[in-house]
Amino acid sequence: SSGINAEWPLRPGDKLPEVRGGSRVWLTADSSSGRLEMYQSESRIIQNPKSELNGTIINSFSFMLANLYRSRRKLPISNQDTMIKEKWCMPPLEGTFFQIVNMNGNHWVLFTNMHQKDPDCVLAYDSFYGRGKADSTDFAEIGAYDQSLVSAAKQLKPMARTLRIVTTEQQKDIVNCGVHALFNAWGLITSKMTNVENINFVRAQIRSSFLDNKVQNLQSAGAQTIGFDNIPTLKYISI
Image (cartoon, rainbow, N blue to C red; front, side):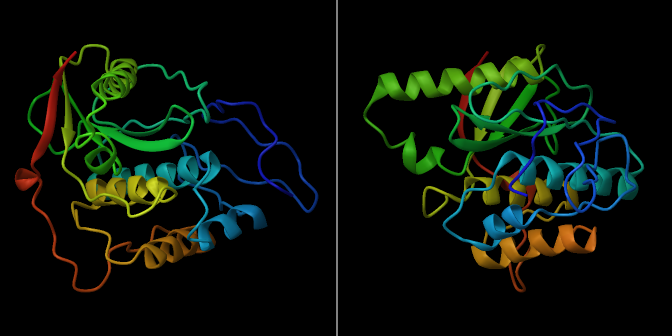
């Protein structure tokens, strides 16, 4: 098999089509049961540091993180399937949420309202913004990209008044945005925000999480935890 042959977006409770050798279990936001079995293609993507994570991996690990949050905190959290490429269109999320969105078909960005006090503010963790946008002199490009971030934030939280682009660790290549997004989401869920010490270690732990059906520790030994009150803001945008 070489990936999912279902229409996006999948809804909670939807089942994937039968595939040779059995059907695949999809961990939805409504269920913590079931074992997610990886296709060999996804396994190879995660193991290859030069491959960008696809929507299947992002969605599946996000649902595992959401279930981890619910089981630990005994509190609700919102997350949903994200459409890949440029066709994503998401209904609003209720209450506390985190959502990884594919921006412009080629870049994963994490949006959330976790660990911040302003209920009308959405945070964006963008692992390419600092090196790709903030230092750019192409102001038209910056403005267009900022507007795409605002559009995503407004879809997720229509009543939001501010988008806060936080300063987060920047990826060192053009393919590991999804790894950074999942790593940051893991930090939010576990309250252990750190820097990515070893990208291959994080990829290996994501793969192990799927194989063991249990979220593994993505934090390298000795990594220093960053307090959420100390995460600086790169930019505020009124929306």
